[in-house]
Length: 315
Length: 233
Image (cartoon, rainbow over all chains, first blue to last red; front, side, top):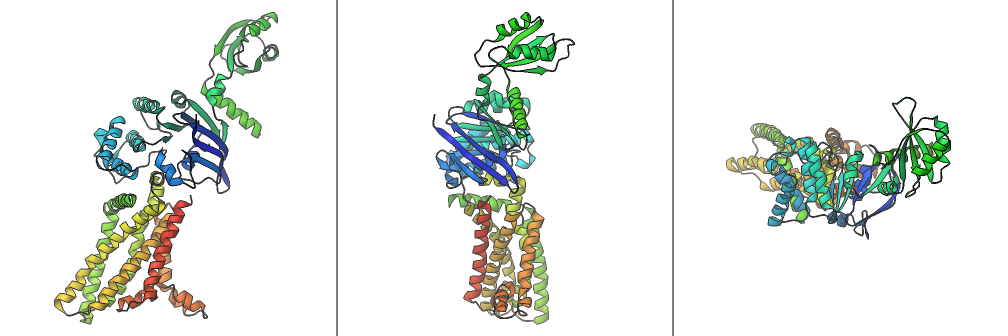
């Protein structure tokens, strides 16, 4: 798959503060990629550089083969951006705003009208087309902002927290919309809500303090086997026994409400069946096992692991 | 060119849907109406020289109100992100804002032409100084709008943008008073930065290319710097 969006060693300084540090990634045509990170981790800065709003301090970014700095106008012709908090022109009515954006993106006359109507229909905005954008609720503002991004049929859509302020029905509608764009558009979504990203993205990048911790958290998840163990023995004993089993990477203790029984998470090599060996080793050592189950590592766990690891390394 | 026309329409809509434009025009016409009537009754001369000097001062006081929101508001409301990530050049954005603001200056000048019409109706004024005065005000207004636009590009706070413009205008208005105190050739340089020095000949009926060039250069320089400020993000 050829790369439609490319970042190479991108760094951005705001005065003395480094917002993005040596970030590199490549995104192929039709991918839906999530950018996950806590507030202030540099997600919006990366998007602003990618869309030509900010200039990287160093490094290089390309969209559809165009350099975002040297050929910014060409980049802006193929990319659409939904900024966080949906900024709109308050003196315009929704219809006027969408027509204005359609015209800026090169649509004219009947084509612009048709594009605006299609986008309004898709985002369920037909009932508010004659309202001033200043009068809209946060949810409607967000939808108007997404609608303007769909105008001009961009190759790349960049959505910064697209579901913030939406009610659950609207969140599902936007999620379905994003999923329907897969294949025909390349979509980048930033969010700090892990479950949201997990549902729509085919790949998840995790960012912390401006540093990209992984360019594919979902791949990392696939590359690991995770077991949940409940055993009635001291932490040191279980650790010693389980860690000695071939294929086990590490053992961590999970908080547990039940007295006497400790819960552990065992991380093992991918596609290695360690469950039987773990049980055998524990039973042989006389440790009672009340539960052993394979669990699918969720994005939240990967995110927490990566951010903890990064914090430990920084320390 | 097409995106310029679209942006200009949007700017005109924003300007003329805002109460500031009407407040500025009302204040301008009230003060100028009073001033014109008073001057006419005292001097009994069919001349607009005094009126032009009063317009010169009023332009310096009102232009910051017109220009302060142009880019500062876009930055504060973050619509700048929408605009600058659309396929439009920074130059088109700056020019659209400049032309829209100039249209308000032109409307104010057109409305003030009723004073010249009054003079022509009741007397026999010399139209040479009237034409040159209006040309001077147009060029002067253009330089003020350019400077105000640049100030608006430097901050997200409209009040600060207005204060920067006003400070620059007032400084360049009276700078010739200090300029005369300086040794040569610094005096020539500083005196020639004065807005009043370059406007005065227009008001009394003289058009010098150096004065036209001064206001045009100031306009072009400030517009260029504004586009540069937008491009360097």
